[in-house]
Length: 195
Length: 241
Image 1 (spheres, rainbow over the protein chains, first blue to last red):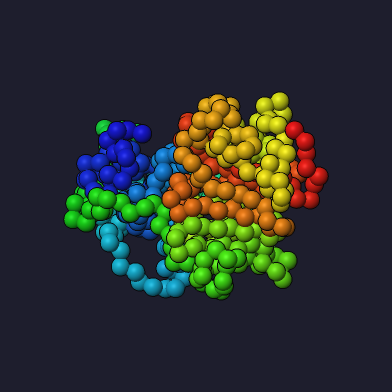
Image 2 (cartoon, rainbow over the protein chains, first blue to last red):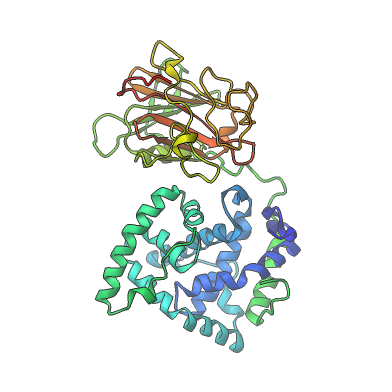
């Protein structure tokens, strides 16, 4: 980790540490979001949500349990799940920072480019959606977001051995689903897994 | 990516807002314990097995229903006492432990995890020839109780190959004293984590080995060391070492 924000809880107190952290991860977070939602305004909101959640939760980061980016993806998953719950309840939650308010034309175009680039991933994301929640989260983190099995297992609090079994099972199901959708699984499911 | 990454207008304004947020509402300088005990799940209050007058217990009923698979209690002194009646409802035990502030991973699927099979520094099982001698011949005697911990117990030390001197009488786990005890009482396993144990704030793995014996493992303070405790399988004949 760069010394600029080590230990990570500094990002909750020091604007400069936060900035260094933000610059290192803003692209990864926006891509993470773009793999999951297709609306640019929502993507902007969620990007802001993920960073706010990271700032609030930085003290929970434990470097013994994996790299910062894996932790950040865990934070991101929770932020997106919270958004889904808000929508389900149709609550108009007041955001502390409303990302979409910060968009102008050029920035909007950049977000849309990113969304375009992640179109394939979103299709995969939909194919994965039928899996049980725990299996789905795992496959997303490994196949969509490129975490190692060990890091993804840590994010989700399961053992690597358990994760491997689940991944194996999930891949078979998703491959079958992609066939139904007329996709070529090998192209759409970049799963062979890094350790 | 690095600090010279060109930010667009959205990214720049978001950064400005985040900076302001942190400046105006900084997180407390002294962070609270990372794993703060959450409000206990109060399902039933019972008198514990003669440990403390009023402890709150969480029971796991498990998928088979009927009798609880485990009980987790926190005494008024802060000790956490886990009683495992059956190797069932691992997920429920994880939740119950979390409610007591213990971060644990529980699995009874006997996939090779556990100090009897040995965990290497990378978390993978050790090869057969590096395994510690099995069984530890029921050093506790009376109840088939085997206690192995931190190199100070009567048995052998369970630790990774890079840990210091197994059985050398030192403290290869670097956690001092007895971070926890694991015993067998009748047909139950009892894991006790004292209030001042480092395990109250450290990831713990509870699992079974291929013989069905219960094991508890945690990272030692020495880099890459795994330490833990194991009981002999109550169903199996004690192995001789």
